[in-house]
Amino acid sequence: MIKNRFTSRPWQVTLAAAATVVVGAAVAQNAAPPQAASAAQPAAQEIPVPDTLKPQNATPAATSPQAGGAAATAATSTVAPATAAAQTQATAPTAPTAIAAPPVVTGKAWVILDAGSGRILAGQNYNAKLEPASITKVMTSYVIAAEMAAGRVKANDQVTMTEEAWREGGAGTDGSYSGFPVNQSAPLVEMEKGMVVQSGNDAAIALAQHVAGTTAAFADLMNHYAGKIGMKNSHFANPTGLPDPNHYSTAYDLALLGRALAKDFPTAYSYNSIKEFTVGPITQQNRNLLLWRDSTVDGIKTGHTGSAGYCLMASAKRADMRLVSVILGSDSMEHRASDSLALLNWGFRFFESNTLFPANKPLQTTRVWKGSITDLPVGTLQPVSVVVPRGQGADLKAVIDVQKAIVAPLKKGQVVGTVKVMQGDKVVSTEPLVALADVAEGGFFRRLWDSLLMLFK
Image (cartoon, rainbow, N blue to C red; front, side, top):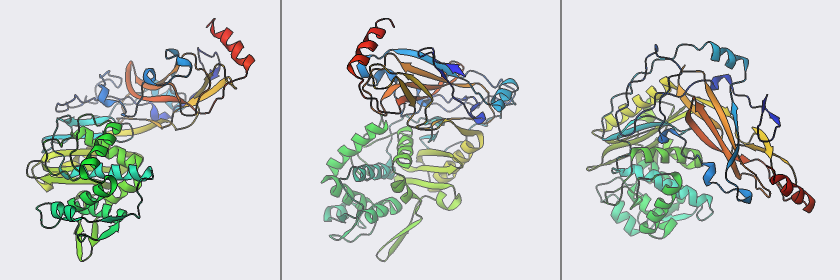
């Protein structure tokens, strides 16, 4: 039982025993990752964690809206593992597993990250701006799914294969095509499968025209959603990935995109696991060879142009852990496939995912002023998870920072602080702490009394 210094009310948060592992083996940005420490090194070794290892959806409390205008942090509560197993492990840690160096990868840039936490496990040159080739179509899928969720397009919309789409991306070009007949229509979801499975440039252009009117307007939507995902070093000029000097991305940005598609739009993501697709008399196979080599791989997208080389965004889920890898600029279809599978196997072998707190469950209650209630339950909208090297450490702790002077009215989901997962003094993961209930403004006397009390805080 732990007391919140701000409210003086007791509260308790229990971490699962599996959450008592330590994050380590951070990989330097834009550099070949060093080999991790051997099993003989201390489990609680302090390794700097760069900002790129934090979840991309983390929102600092200082930049979040605050009811009543107060933004300072008033209370910090530290939560340590509370189960008997955790206590035992903390006092008698087992030897950490030695982490082998990641596989050697053929390509200009590559990265592998944990989809749950957003942590980079390894990578090289992953912030270099390069051509994404047809991996671009994952961004096209994301835009279509987002616009569908907003109600602006529907799965059964009839999408026309325009003459422009057929001429610029159809069978008469050097690129991949879907085979939908010119000047004929098909349901949006079927056209999208032709784009995803067969990497049809013609289908991508037709879909872009249907969603936004022109491919240029669709590119604006692509860049808008890329910004929301956190793709800071990307710019899209078309829905296909055909070469353009203003069309580029990075291995890291593309990994964020794959993570976002799987998380935000699982139905659209599922099309990437389809092994073959038929349009009229033409049946084409998915170019992602990993779909035939590993049953846990369910995507995501290949790409190739003469200037971009061979590219692959791959993803697999084993148990409760999903990893995403991206390789750009490989020299063959076989190398991009075998290297991607080697990266995924390495990640699953040497790392494990741990969920510390579930979503939408109260972690504590905190004082709310001038409201219809005084005790506000707070928690996180997303599960608080971290990925860690297997067997390392025993000192993960959660630190809950609550903003000062939380004043009603409040909306459910409003940010009121942060939950940080720490290894020693290093931040491993950060999630927004939010109100888990609406709080209406209190009556006149409640507001008056609380105003007086706040003067002496």
